[in-house]
Length: 80
Image 1 (spheres, rainbow, N blue to C red):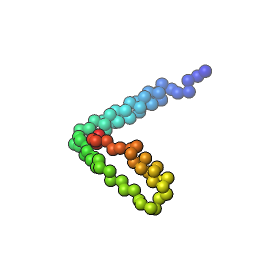
Image 2 (cartoon, one colour; image 1 turned 60 degrees about the horizontal axis):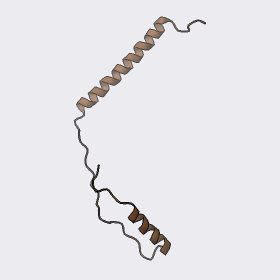
Image 3 (cartoon, rainbow, N blue to C red; image 1 turned 90 degrees about the vertical axis):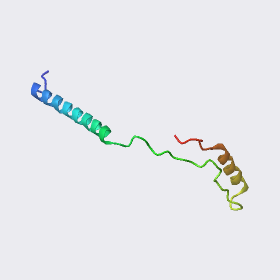
Image 4 (cartoon, rainbow, N blue to C red; image 1 turned 30 degrees about the vertical axis):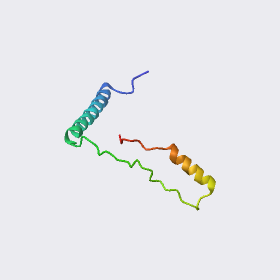
């Protein structure tokens, strides 16, 4: 079986691949050097119960389920 590619074609493919990798590394380095933002804004959540249950518009079973869901899910004390 003969090789369908010549040595020159293989060398050109390898050079193209190497050039693409070098360009990607240069863009990564430039992005890190020029990007001055090192910290992110911390999100602050209110820890009080701000959820209000509608009165008389829901059925009794739905009120029990919604109050059960409110007590099951809690916000974290800190925002990470």
